[in-house]
Length: 350
Image (cartoon, rainbow, N blue to C red):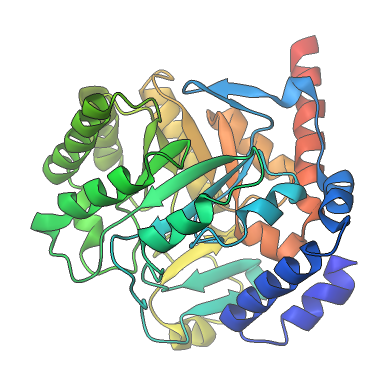
C-alpha cells in the first residue's frame, strides 16, 4: 500500500515539506487510541535470536534508524512502533540553527537515493532534551552531536562537549559527527590530530562523569585507505567504543539520474542505494584491517534484507536505515529483521 498509494502522493510534494507533513500525520494519527498498538502489532518483529548485545547495550534487533530522520527528537516515541531496534536523533548542535538555504533535499528516484545539503538544521540540543524527558517507550536512543556552523574548527571541541554534557542523562549512546559534507570545513576534523584531540576530550569527560554510554565516531565513505588506517589507529588510541560507517558521499559516479539533473541539484551528500557498495567496502576494510577490534554500525543503501546482510557479512554488528525507509515504507524494517533471522539460522546450521 505504501509504494502504490502513499509514496506517490508524498512524492508529489517537495521532499522537505513532505517529510514534515509525514511527521505531522504520524503524530496526529498516533494520538488516536489504539493506533500505536496496532502499528506495533503490524510492524514489529521480535525473536530472541535477533537480540544483539554490543558495547554494553542490549538491542532487541539489529536494525536502527539513522540520524537525520528525527533530528529534533520529535517522533521517536511513535517511530518505535515501526520495529526499530534503536533510534538515533540529531545531528544536534549547542545552539539552534536554520541550516543551509532551501531547497536542500532532493530525490533521485531512478537511483532510490537522496541528495541533501541540510547543514545541521536543528532547534538546538536543549529543545531535544525537553522532548526526551517525555520518553514513553523503552527504545534505545542514540545522540548524534555536532558543532554549530559559526563555531570555528579550533573551538569545535567545546560544542561537542556541550552537547555531550547536556544529553548525558537522556541517551543510550553518543555519535560524534565530523563527516557531514554540508557544514563548511567540518570534514577537516576527521584529520588524525584534531580528531584524536576531540575524542580524547570526550573520553576524559566520560570518565569524569562516571558514564557508561558508548561513544562512536561516524565517518565518511570518501576516506582513502590511508585515512581509514588512521581511523583504526585513532579508535585504538582513544579507546572509543566503535564506528558508524558511513555518512553520505560527495561522489556522483554511476548514477542513473541524468547528469544534467544531478548538476542542477548541486552540492550535497548522496545517500541511498547509490552509496551501498561504497559503504560496505569501508566496513569490510575497517573490520578486516582491525581484525574486528571494535563494533561497526553499518549504514548506507540498505532497503532490503539482502542489503543488511551484506553489511553484516562485511563485519557490521548492527545496521541503520534512512533513505531506504523513505522509498520502501514502514514494512521494510520487519522484512529486514525476518531476513536477518533466516540468515542467522542458516549460518548457525553451518
